[in-house]
Amino acid sequence: MRGLGRVLFSLAALAVVLSLPARAWACACCSNEGDYYVSTGRPSEYERSIVRQVRFGQTANLYTTEADLEESAKGVAHVAEKYAFAGGLVGGVWRLTFREGGKTGTLSLPLPARWTSYTADIRDGQTSPGGGPLLYKEWRFEGQVSGTGFFKAGIVGPTRYTLVLQGRGNGCQDALDFKHWRLQVSGRKAAYAFYGELADPQ
Image 1 (cartoon, rainbow, N blue to C red):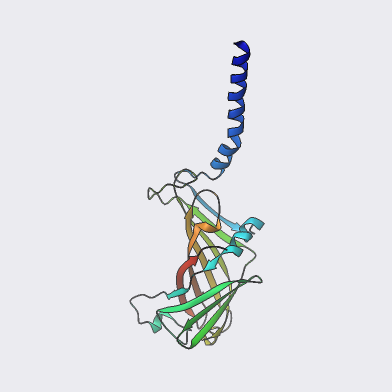
Image 2 (cartoon, one colour):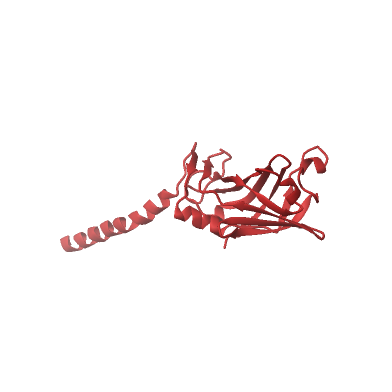
C-alpha cells in the first residue's frame, strides 16, 4: 500500500508540474481591471510581423460632420461619402487606393520607425478570453504622406498623416485583435479623414 501511495503521490505531483506552463502561458495574456498602458518607441520584430499581417477592408468612408460634404474633404478633388478601397503594406509603405466611379486617388504612408500603442480597460463589462476584462487597443502611426490622382492637388508642402488601428483583445497583442482603422490627413491644403473596417489578417 505504501508503494501504491508513493506512485499516486508522484503522479499527482507530475500532473501539477505539467500544468504549470499552460497556466503561466494563460496568465501572460491575462488582463486586469483598470489596466491602462501607453508606450511610444521602436516596435519589436513581433509587433512588426503583426503590422505586416494587417489587411484593409474593401470600403473607405469619408468622415463627415454637419458641414457640407466638400468642407469635410479639403484637398480631395473628387468627393464622395464612400469609396471602393484597397491597400496594404508594400516595402515599408502603406499604399491605399480609393476609387469612386472612374476616379482614383492613392495615398502613400511610409511606416514610421516609432509608433504609439494604447491599451486600456474601458470598464464595459466585457470579458477577455485570456482572463480579465476585454481591453480596448490602438496602434497609432504618424508621418508624412504623398498622394496621386484626386489627392495630388492637396499635397502641398509637408502634409502629415495619422493612421490608427483599433481593436479589442486580451493582454497579448495579436493581428486578430484589430478590426477597424481611421486615417487623418492634414496640411496647408489638406484636411480630411477616412475610416473603415479591417479584413481578416493574412
